[in-house]
Length: 275
Image 1: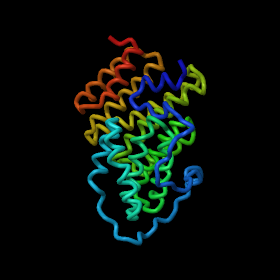
Image 2 (image 1 turned 60 degrees about the horizontal axis):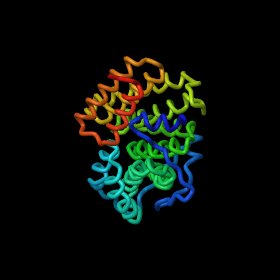
Image 3 (image 1 turned 180 degrees about the horizontal axis):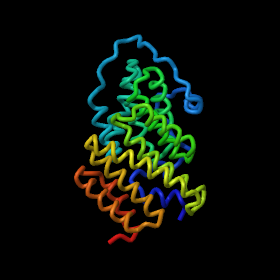
């Protein structure tokens, strides 16, 4: 079995398990953000030309659905909202909506997340808003993970975390960052060839667990625990892996996690030969 398929089966977030040459990129499109990621250059926030409205509450609801891996309803809500908010030049709201829309569609065909993620980054540049920056670079990094651009993904997710270290998306950034590092630990093979990357993943997950605990998010704590279990499994520590899976599944139950997350945890439990 290929390395990425093992990874996708074992972990809760199976980003980038499909790619398709005939991908339809949803509008809106934006200029590439590669230079910003590579150089760290920050654009001056733009002054909006139209009054900015409060964020529609549907964005926050869709965010929670994405965190719980309940992707379809989040995508259905956000797709028309992105267009509407973009047309009306609502910088912050359109950036957040585009970021969470990208995260809602990246699982099935990674390339579908590219345009909205890039647009979200452009709105992060316009607003300088830490929450928009964080969500936008999580979206971009998750897309990059999906197309196996691991170094770029790691840089984007670090930027997401650094933008708002105590913010609502910081734990999520570290969870996806850990998945990038687990992928990198394989070094393009079917075996762990860079175990030091697992250590980096473990450090990120420690931060994620602390943040999720402080913020009272069972879903994010569960996801961090499941990813930590994957690290333990690849470190050949069965007892630790099984204990962490059990903890993570308990958190999933408390959070009424989606079948997508619980089945991923069960797959990891089975692969670890837990009782």
